[in-house]
Length: 222
Length: 230
Length: 39
Image 1 (cartoon, helix red, strand yellow):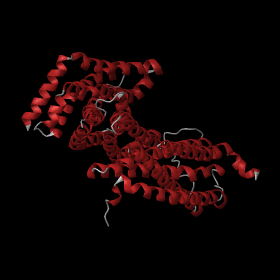
Image 2 (spheres, helix red, strand yellow):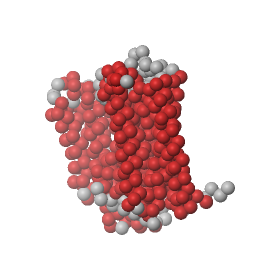
Image 3 (cartoon, chains in turn green, red, cyan):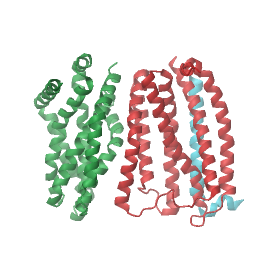
């Protein structure tokens, strides 16, 4: 079982490394979106400080969503997906491994870069930890839920935009709790409740999403 | 009783027409009764004047929007579990009506908000959740519209509906928490008029009317879907 | 009678709500009828 997981993760990471530009563009998108907001709302420091958690989280959401179509598209195009569906390894396990690999390249970098963006918004350094932790807990959930959408919209025309429409409403609780944890911490109330809820989301998503992703893949591949 | 007798589109087809006819009549009768109660029996509200009468549409529409989504998800789950074609068709038939009621709830909520709270839109927990519900409906319809193969469309939509229905309580409680964080003692559009008996009666009757209407429309729509797929 | 239509000054809001609601339900029925004829 662990052999299959290791194999898939290693393969997906290798493929991602071969196309570094895909990974880099998603990351760059994160940074650009977060940089756009001050241009739109004005550079008043108090305002920026108050909207920082929300903006960074929304930027993370959008960036995570953009990179979702990559999850299954390449495998679908060259027939690997069919092989996986016919193969011996349990599909839930395979998709969990794929989602994990996807998160390593699209989610984890966001966690690491977020403090830089927080610096741009003059967020107090004491909040960097909460911000990073909230993203660390939240981005895997985004990957898992997004993977369901990616599997459902596999091969469809207009797939990318449709994927956004499907997946963004489901992202809302993660966004609320993620940004909320930082805001609570900023108000001096700790934010542990929200972080614990995020952790709960993660556990539930990790437990149930792979099944849904596998079912969606089977539906999309008939 | 053989539950699966009517699971075949062919046998269900004439039954749907009968159901549509009777629920349609019930809808009209209940709507007339409900409107009568709402306009002529229920007294004027002390704080909101006549504006509160919007409640007789707003609350029933909101109830229906949520109820129809759950029913849709129920048929979707049944279709995935038993692989019955008709279940998927039922889910597809319910979606547009559900989306419509969601929009009506938002529209009437907005028009109720203006005279009572001063703005057309408030980020009230219920209204915001209702907005997200509209997105869930539109996503469901969009996904099915984007897939050409009817079987794949039914099943993909079904999975999405099930994922959505599980998320709805989570979304609602998240939004409610978010709302209290940002607005403190905010006002909820529903809680304001005290529920005098005629008001509650009017709301219930209108809700039943909308329910009967939804059944009638869903029956007609599922008949269309059955015919289109032959 | 005119009092009824004025709805205590909230005519726009009340009739706007009821009007749009029944209009939309009516449109839904019409569209369904068209679809039924086409099928």
